[in-house]
Image (cartoon, rainbow, N blue to C red; front, side):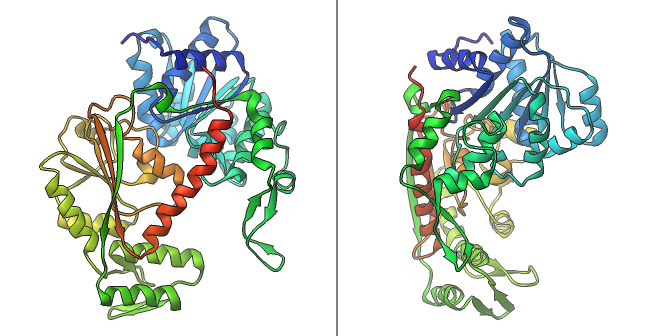
Length: 445
């Protein structure tokens, strides 16, 4: 296939070539992979500025999406690539190919660095936001070899999904601390104030009044952002809620767990020792089942399963993608409906070919980079995630360029009066911070 870049794509390609450090905040569906590959090909074979490139991405994206894009476009056919995922022997064999581009999943970055085989002069991080934890092995490993890298590109559509604090580690990797400081403690002291605390123990921080504007100003010289709605004719997006009501008895069980952190049921006792565990338990109960202290599944209600049945029936045979969160959600959905979970390359192909009427995905494993827009246009959230990044990325599997339907429907099954409503509200509030970042450095194309 011949590549005819849109104006915004041509702009992004030239930006990467002109900047040795680049943060490319591209909305889902804008073609960040082909943009990056085109810039890489030019840097390799036109200007000869780099000789060996490492691409780091989520496992399925590294294994499927990047190789697929190289093979798809005529102007990239001359590129050689190797995919360093899988067993130790498979990874070593990939490195031995000495390809122009080596593609690795982020979980193996630590192995690559420690093996002594890191000899890349350019690094492209697909989903830069996956390096937001500065204590993680992948961050520390990449930081160790960062001085060896002449060029680095960070790609993401969700740079600050959990707030401005995420940005420090992402930009620390890119510019080695030049813009936001070399130490997280200095960044925190400069731009944040303690928020929730218990005596001397601080649980969370809030930005100082001037923080957002100053942070955006500091990173603006190496950052561009683009939104798909500005550059593509996207399908109409409709989001809706399918509310279910708990019975009086079910509601009593929910309130008992919420207020006393202990819910006594006929099959055992469930406890939630802290607030984090409590929200997890409440989300489980809102979905209809809960794990007891021995990890047994205790079924409480089938309200969301009934709602999902209504949605499937009303679809009249049109494909539906269902996002679940807990394992017991998966088990109960499978028990009641004829469904198939999307996990392998064949699952993706069959879904896009219309062979799977009802498909299941877990946001943490299928959120990034998978092209599922050819298989359907309806996504149902059976259970929500607190992660804005996973939420948006999962929605973007259907709502993106290449979607043939005129309308994409994102439907949320919500247990009324439960934590479900708080999660949706939290996702909305987090999105405001992220949109402010994207708008602040928005590229004028």
